[in-house]
Length: 320
Image (cartoon, rainbow, N blue to C red):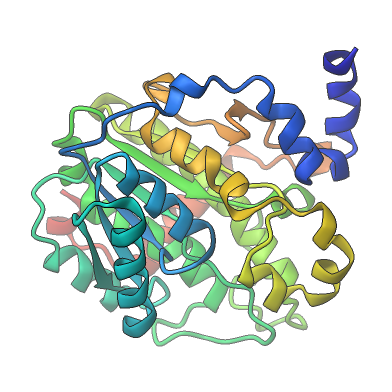
């Protein structure tokens, strides 16, 4: 009976994205999926000093992976490194400073990384601005952080990812993207009143499409690229950015560990090996469209890739 009700409860959104949804979905989890030894694997996690990124970094370190925390704030990054090393009992955790909204910072990170091989790249860094902000590169802040920066970092690390025997890229999107259709109109928000929630959701839709496009492009290299959404998790980012939602929904929010579970599963589990170009929640592939009006055209999908290439300023040498 419980399994028969799952499609109905999942369609409600509320009882799928909340903690009750996680508990239902977790009935089908196999504990052995994450009983893995990641020794010798290098994982780069952006936005890793707090929230879902920190939990993902900790869980990977617990399994023996060498983890690089990509952080904007050095002090908070150092604190995260120390606490993750202590909790995991693994010394192979370090921090690298990077601001995904600053393309020069992204390039500097890629040039600075000593690793010749990166096994896992997790795009977790995110924000939800109250006001319109244009970066030094001329990009709206949400687009720069969620789309342009991750696009450039992935392109810059392609060869190092391809050097892995099991390379994986994970985009941490959001269920909020379900309300949005991919649109390239007015990406700088110069022609309309700024709405941070909408800007966030639009760029989270772009991440899902970008993951699919990367998966198609990189299939021959063996690099698996997936996106996921964590459901509604109790994180500091949600509390700060959506205070009313947080107050009302707090009793039903997932823990950060529950929200990060699928990030870790996609990054580490043998059960996820070979999966690419899909959108996941709670260790299962999910539809990318709940409403027919959100389905984008192939031309718009190509336009997103072209726009990312254009704004990233990739040189021929970098793109090789």
